[in-house]
Image (cartoon, rainbow, N blue to C red):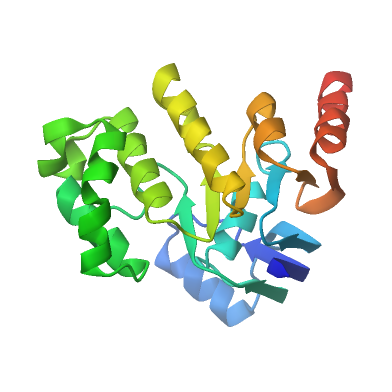
Length: 243
């Protein structure tokens, strides 16, 4: 059964997203001459079945994070169709999903509420979340006072303990000490062995090959290859060496 399906998906962004003068906006509006958009995804199609692990590889700017943001529902496609069947927890850029002025405790409760976790269930999980994160008494402090490593620890612990059906991970596990990275790796292995679905972006190919069955290779928004993780990683790595 498909948990995630992309059918002929296109996604664009304006090339000049930075601040521009009001007169520039007005000129473009009256002349109907907006610059050509940047196409982050171009006619991408793939499926991910329940219990699979899928890695997304490609150079910076290939469209990997855009693909994950569409799966998470953070943005709609311009064309094509994206469908997701199952509860999703996402680990994207550090601090995403957290309110900086709320404490760790308050952010844990907020995230659980957004995922539809009952208060009773969260109370059962709360001590495990805090213990796994290893941030100790800082859980009572505002998120804005956390280091990047502490943010990653808490974000990962919340996401994995709330037991989603699909886990999205975008490079954030490269932050923090080696011991905690190994701890996270082992927890994701448990997650996979429980029959859950993983979709991840990472340049740590050794980890990717252990966690994922398949990989897709994106290049300038286009899907170049979809197959066994080892074959795709080897093909992509070969391209990088020869470039």
